[in-house]
Image (cartoon, rainbow, N blue to C red):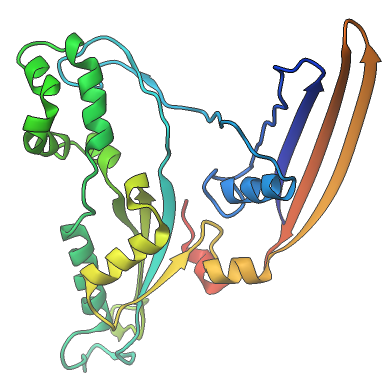
Length: 288
């Protein structure tokens, strides 16, 4: 049994400038199916219209930008999403290694698809990075100061420099990581199915998971390769939303007293438990 915990604390004071504060906690990834989506659904159900959202934010780093030795506090106004994709090829029958298939095997077809994904990374989104450079330009050493101050002119050069390091490349585009491969079990047996699992970290500039899946299909360009989204829980996304049942337990405690002005405090605790379907065959390949 998997359990998610959402804690909501609301303070309603008579002072006109004080507004309710709602901390929201999840036991899983914020962007997972029971993370930000569950929080948004609950706030929508309560008809809450948030004025702003405070997340964990980013880090304070030294030497994060070449030429600047001072610590930089990055302000994060967006966060990458996550998406897992299961690639499967089963167009060739299983057999014995003494009689390999004519043409490409399932493993060969899948390998070619993976090679295409890695050879064609997602487009870069340099806008936010260039704004950061312009902001810190005065702190950079010469000649980087000139380059950062005129980022609009040197953006092609900057893009090449950023893409040379995996840490900075990951900041400006959706990443593709092939993490799990699964095919044959014996050295003399030809597998009838080949599987691969890909983890994407989605840049906000790519807008949606549908766009990412569409891009992968276009790059692979092979109808023999089946693509299906895959959740962190080891189940297909479709199965998760179709079969997950939830139970909720609500506990509210209110206390009212009078001092300079009337104060009301309400503490609400909701416990959501999701009973997932029996583990699918995907569960053994699960990685987070």
